[in-house]
Length: 226
Image (cartoon, rainbow, N blue to C red; front, side):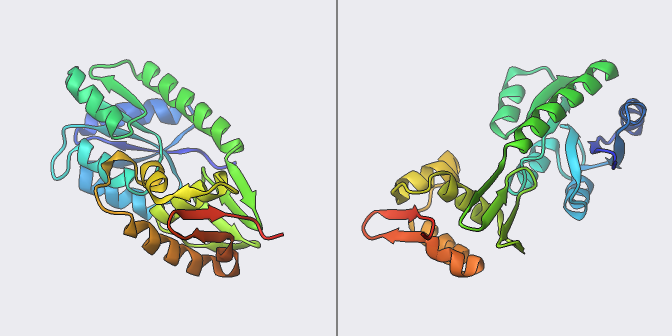
């Protein structure tokens, strides 16, 4: 069985070694990055990183920027490490989608325990996060889609949009509701972006794209072909 891979990102080599040693003893595979830019490159070069331990204060690109970059494309669990114990920093971290927040100095044993707890939680979720409709299979944990057994490459937003449609199949969904649910509060454009994404999504799904029905004057509905 392959070891679970964790990326440790910190500009202090001693800190990386400390965390790496404890994680390795616990049976994890560890990859390291010395700054934010290296972390982003490494994450996208390797598609099997299960969790990221990320320092806030780093050269080239800080932890917040790394988190923003990765959250555009992935929901991989992120633990933030910081020398500050500032409530504003903590709130910013959670707003960016950070799973845990640990202030330095910390106990490596506690860090490993947090890692194990998060991985248990995410693996429990992933067991029930495969959904299927009309030959379309969506694996939410792996962020993958297949149609009639063949893999389909989707962008992050196309994936989120398809997942939302399938999870709400049979329901009429207004463009406003889709915007609020898929693009969330951080999107300030107009509803035409949905039409563009739906067009691309239908094209990538082939004949299965016909299950995304247009409701004129309102939005869309996902209906399985009978």
